[in-house]
Amino acid sequence: MINSFWQIIKEKQAIIWWWLIGLLAVVTLFSFVQPLKYSAESQILVVPDYRQTTDPYQISKTNEYLSSLLAQVTYSSSFFEATVKPDYQIDSAYFGNTSKKRMSKWQKTIEVKALNDSGIISVKAYHPDKQQAENLVRAINYNLITKNNFYHGLGDKVVLKVIDEPLVSLWPAKPNLPINFSLAFVLGLLLGLFHIYLVSASSENNEIDEAVINWPSSEAIEDYVAEPVISQEELARPENPVEPVEIAAVMEQVENSFVPQNLATETVLAGQDITENLSRGGNIDNIFR
Image (cartoon, rainbow, N blue to C red; front, side, top):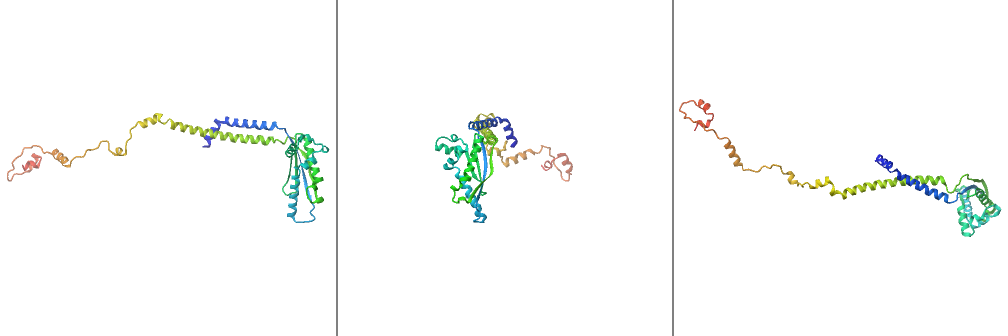
């Protein structure tokens, strides 16, 4: 079965190529219609004051809470206004001229998240210009370090430190071209194989349907239908049946078939040897007649 399906794939490989070319073309169009963006990434470590507790579980939960809180704060409008300023050499016109557009663009530009309960915050920014991406990350880091006490109630007991300086990508990070083209290739291959399977299954069903529809017109079937139908009783009946006869008639025929010949009879005298007569007559019946 595998060999037969592989043979079908070879015969209908054009279907796979059409799917591959189509999906690759769509991905290419989608990828290059939007502007290519570079990424800048940095990491910050949240260091709370642990002198009040030595419980490892409590320390872990505190790190998780603070890092998650500060990561979510960066998406707020107040943080945006504090970050996007000419002092940090950030182009504010890139984000639009209305509050809705500015916030929508800002949330698509940055990617800030806490790394589990480690107390580390990953800061990433995307921009068509490499320098602008780096400036955005540096501005976010600076505001988190200097103004984090506005977003929690621990005051100066929380310290943030940059553990990874902003690193700018050499190639565009959005859209992710290697992943997009790889997915398009795999999806095109799977869809092409599925299409071939449907076509082969449909052709087999059509052949069966045509055979059923054209059933009366088939010469072999017509010859078969033209043959007389023989019942089971006729099949059990012998070809040359023997008519029943009377037993008396049979016995009469047997007796007639052994009718003795008309031989000359001789008179047997008293004291005469009959052996000679038996040899001459051949039939003992002729002796006693």
